Image (cartoon, rainbow, N blue to C red):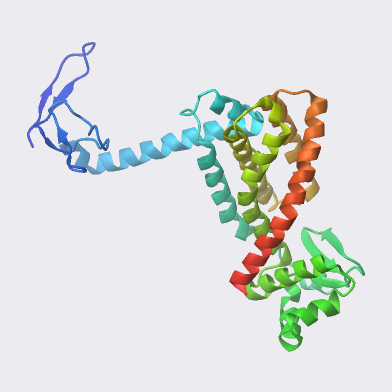
Length: 326
């Protein structure tokens, strides 16, 4: 296909490439000589230089670094300016940053990729120690041990659990070792043990994976709570949803940082919760523009409501995962 290129000296108009009229190679729409892009599908007209190896790699790298720079341009204010991204997005500045839902997906996918590498091993010496006589969570030497009424629940005990459950049955096993616990606790333990036996995962890994899946369901829940507690602002549910996406994106990013830091030091769960609550407080103040006192009261009420809704949903998700894996 022959093309005419009008070349002009520097300082003048940009060169214009003319093509023969014909159909778009992608969708068949008729293109005129001065059409460089298809007006229907947007595909660029194919030229000789488009079929070079240099052009192939150049386009790929440009697209990658464009997203890369946009992603980091979004991450920095997400961490350093709580609530600022939501303000900018609702003010119409949407092309400069990664879209809220895409941002959440990218960060959550990175977290799930890193999660399997964060498993905590339990040494034989630790596994042989006598557990606490009551329900407890012990964190020592970067190893997490969950115990219920003297029964240690960790990856070192999975084989013995499996053997006893195979001989007596899961329900009888739970009734024997957790007879003083409430019905909800027994139900919770049964589902967790099903997943542990089927997948060979530790109890902590089961909790991490289930809680991570739960967050996807709680994004619209948090948006609904924000709608209720800030009902006088007369904001659309859509605005609260964008805020919720940014908040949960930061939460997953915080988990990623903790996973990476976990290779060197142990970070308490309470520190993670405290950092997230402080971040949420600052984000609420920036976006909804209310006093510190009102924001503190609302974040307390929202947190309590969030947990009340999250716990039953957590049980449902845990049961669903148990059914699919056992």
